[in-house]
Image 1 (cartoon, rainbow, N blue to C red):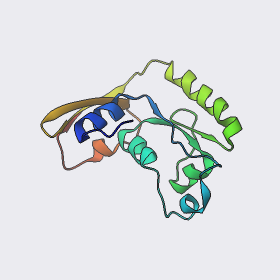
Image 2 (image 1 turned 90 degrees about the vertical axis):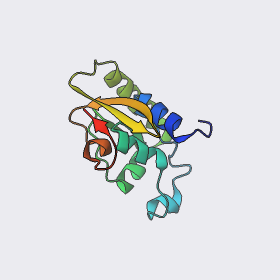
Image 3 (image 1 turned 180 degrees about the vertical axis):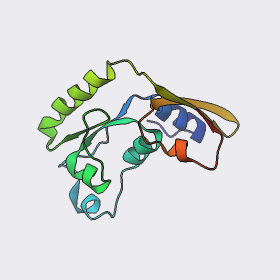
Length: 132
C-alpha cells in the first residue's frame, strides 16, 4: 500500500475483509519472538476487528487464539494456503448481525463493519465519534 494520508489509510483498512500479515518462519526471527518488534498489520486488524490468517508464532506474541471463524493459524509457509482457503470459505458466508461504525477522522467519514461478537477497539474507544 502506498504512503497514504490518515483518512485514506483508515478508509482502506476499514474496507478490507481480512488481513494477511507478511510474517512467517522466513522472517519471524528473535525480534518478534522476544517482543522487541510488533506487526502493525496485526495491530490494525485487531483494532478494526478484521479476520486474520496469521503465522502461529506471531499469533502467540499477540495472544491470538485460533477460532476458525475470525483467526486462522498456520505453522509453516507451506500450510498457509490451507488456512487462507478456510478464511476465504468463511468470508463467503453472509455477514449477519454486523456492527457498523462510522468514524470521523480529520472531518472526513470512515465506515467499516465487523461481526457483533468481535472485540473492536473502536467499540471501546472513548475519544472519537463512533456510532453503531
